[in-house]
Image (tube, rainbow, N blue to C red; front, side, top):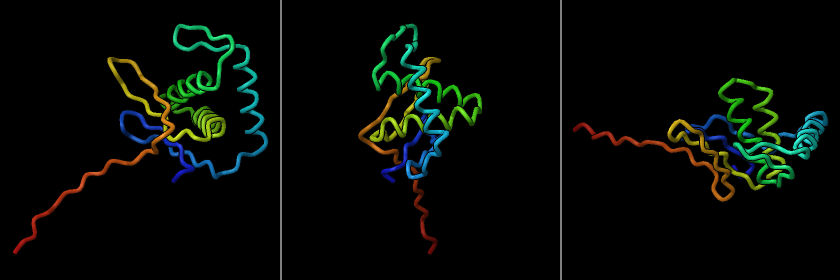
Length: 126
């Protein structure tokens, strides 16, 4: 389970990305292209970042991932997950919560997602 990166929105797992699946060369080159594009600068919220560090890049890509999930854009979901999982090998979860109409993104490195489950106890009939 250590090799899984979960994308969790408001407590529901939307994607489980398995790092054990090898990336074809074309996809690896696409991740490099994403980095080259971000070398030119990115926008985080209303702030322009001219030389983004790894964490800023990850937040930028995670934001695109969330938008792709809402747009059902499978290609962008796959690329974003691959980027995050490969560039941040210790990333366990992309945790997204809705708060006052805004989406808050938290990158979780220290705790894998554990599905919450409810156990109902049934009284035995005698």
